[in-house]
Amino acid sequence: MKKIVYVTGSRAEYGIMKRLLLALDHDPEIELTIVATGMHCDKKYGLTYKVIENDGLKIDCLININIDTSNNAQILNSMSICQSEFGQYFQNNKFDAVMILGDRYEIFSVAIAAAMHNLPIIHLHGGEKTLGNYDEFIRHAITKMSKLHLASTEEYRQRIIQMGEHPDTVFNVGALGAENSLLMDLPSKAQLETKFGLLQKSYFMVVFHPETLTSVSPSAQITELLNALTEFTDQYHFIFIGSNSDTGSDEITENIKIFCAETGSRFMTSVKPEEYLALNKYSNGLIGNSSSGLIEAPSLKIATINIGDRQKGRVRGDTVIDCICNKKDIIDSITNSQAEDMQQKVMNSVNPYYQQAVLDNIILDVKCFLNNPIELCKDFHDIKTSN
Image (cartoon, rainbow, N blue to C red; front, side):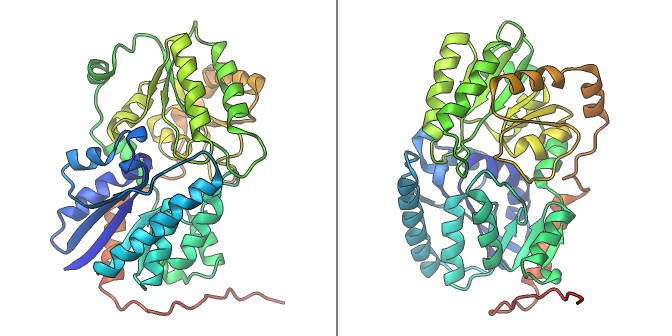
């Protein structure tokens, strides 16, 4: 039996991985351990480790890293705590592999600790570009520490190979999120209303995170967005989901809460993965700058109004309307998202992140990786160029 530890740091990333983790937990060939850190352990973000436990998954350890998003120095302090704690955890607990997803700063610290202990890292969603956020360089740095790469598109697979990873270790498996939207057992609209209140008015979902590699302040950006949404409050309702714990996220949350109090819109710190997908499914569209607008939303056949540069560089389909972060552009994009031609395009669109049997293929690739010899010293794969 092979021992895998999965480290989860946020509600969004856990939501993507939930079906896979449940499958691995019931696999007789795998001994799965789960460690929760980051936002999961913070009351401000809803103590979402309880969602994991309620899904029937046992958490081996909670590692609180004292998140403070007021500035980058405080984020770095949280990262140092995370690296130190996981350094000790990996000293005391041995695994055949560490599995991680994505590009968050706490996951970067986990990857460093695992790599220093020479634990093979299985990395999902490498090779992607998000030029407006520090996730961009974190993701690529994790790639260089990882030994199995499960990319979500062929473009991303090729980029990972371009970074010196051997093609035999890089697989284009598609995105779990795109498959989750179609295969997860989602609550009905009536069930959502029982829990969250009536959804009689047409509504948009709104998820907005800070841009951490641009010169525009989070408060300036959220002001532009909320000023635009004000123009639609007679026509639509808005449901906000809390921001990630990135630098400046508290400014965004404070402004959103004031807007909700003044307009009757709803703010939810966090919801269960299937509730988030269902809320989007019954909505008029997703507004903001979340990766879920590019990866999950297209499978739900809703439009995405993608604002600013946070997701700049990521592959996107025909359901996505890109706009700059100013009031007029956002207003125009929301209006255009509901036009008949755009709605027809959404219904006929193909999600570029979707592949059949994503979950099953990931499990096959992981088992093959674990059941074959793993080189302790990973070489750099040079791409031959013609003169």
